[in-house]
Every structure is written in structure tokens, then in C-alpha cells.
Image 1: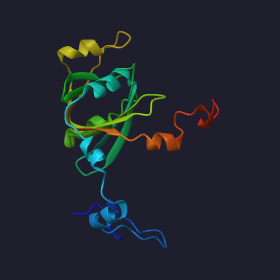
Image 2 (image 1 turned 180 degrees about the horizontal axis):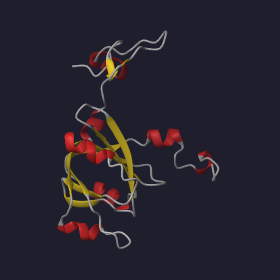
Image 3 (image 1 turned 90 degrees about the vertical axis):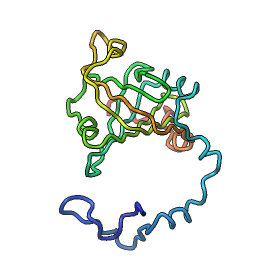
Image 4 (image 1 turned 60 degrees about the vertical axis):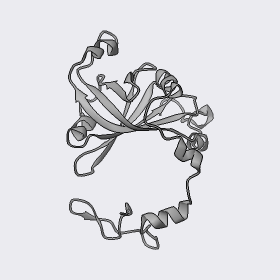
Length: 192
């Protein structure tokens, strides 16, 4: 099965995708593997399904997470989540809980999870060249005994995203180095 988008595939209701003039679309997973080559064994071996001590240390220091979801039709959403370092609560070696703290009230991730539980989390620590990816299946809770421990500034969360971990992966820091994300000289001037 190929994830490549054929030239005239429907990409959204009422819309089709036409490749830009002169472009050459990828045709298959086999072609992709031919272009990328075989992953190094070290990369494959880094994937695991239970939190390690290194993962727990990273989660305890991480103040920021990106949550990616999609609805039952595949429409995607990626939303930032954050709080004090360690805002993600570890329930056990294969389960995480993220409190829903006050925000824009859209609930896009929650709406998606109601129809498709698959979720991807990406954790970042400012200044650290570490990126932790967690893929799993999510549920939404309206209450649990651990909610008290996720209270922030006197506000107990109304909801929590609970993720049953399928796989954990520590990413190579190359993208952070290339982007200069943590290099102050690359940041836009304050006030823009």
C-alpha cells in the first residue's frame, strides 16, 4: 500500500491535487525506500514501547508538547500543549496523562479523538537537543483521582488526555541543529 498522493487524488471534499508544473510526484513506498535507503539498525532499535529512565527524565523536564490527531476522515490537527516542566503525568510505564489547561476552547484534538483515538506527541525542552516522540491511542477523561495532582494555580483540570503508548522514539537532533531553534541569534526581534 502506498501513502503517495496520486496526481488526481481527492485531497479534500470538492478539491483535487494537481502537481505543480514540472514536478515529479512520488509513486510508491518502494520508490520512497529506494530514495531514502535502508534505515540504520541503531535507528530501528531506538523504538520501544515502555518509558525508560531517560524518557522519564525528559518528561520531567519538558514544559512543551505538540499533540497531533486526525478525525475519522483523516483531517489532521496539531496543537501545542505546555505547562511547568513535568506537566505530563506518568501513570505507568505505558500510560501518560496531559491535563487540559485553559486555552481557546476549540477542543480540536478532543473532537478528533472522539472519532479516531490515534495520537502523536512530540516533546521539546528549550535549549536541549532532545526530541521525544510518543505514538499511541488516546482517551479523554472528565475526572480521575490523579486530576488533583495536575492542579495549576488552584485550577483543577476539567479534562485530561490519557495516552496508551504504542511506541516511543528519541529523535536525532539534526533538525534542531539545522533550524537553529535554540540559538538566540536566529530568533526574530521581540515585539514582532
